[in-house]
Image 1 (cartoon, rainbow, N blue to C red):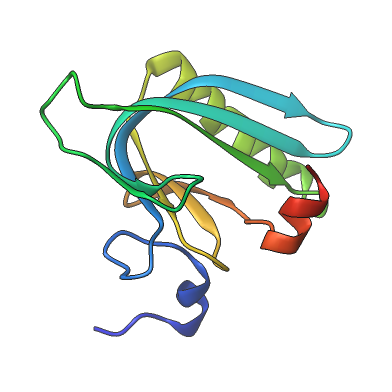
Image 2 (image 1 turned 90 degrees about the vertical axis):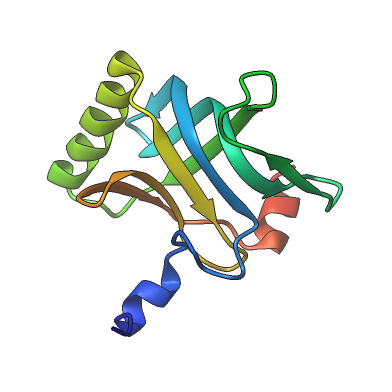
Length: 137
């Protein structure tokens, strides 16, 4: 079965160009700025792989409690979402935080980062282009 063309914008499990595929993460902090519609989510204690800031590939195998991803942070600025969508993002993130629900983070250059609870519950975090990220430092 082929994927719908729109889904190619999303970083999804199994995609060959992922620079992060980390599962079992728990939400440790949620920052909500309702004025700018910005969400920042801190995550910790996952397993999988990601490319670190130096460009090195880091692997954290499942089942080894001494080898877990320390922390990760994702931010989304969603100025154009409706009130209902904004409320759903905040509600889902707070539920994940309150219940320590394990989530999966998938990210790839030029694609939308996805936090996944299960097949039916996921949140999209548009990724800044590299030049925008550099300008905001």
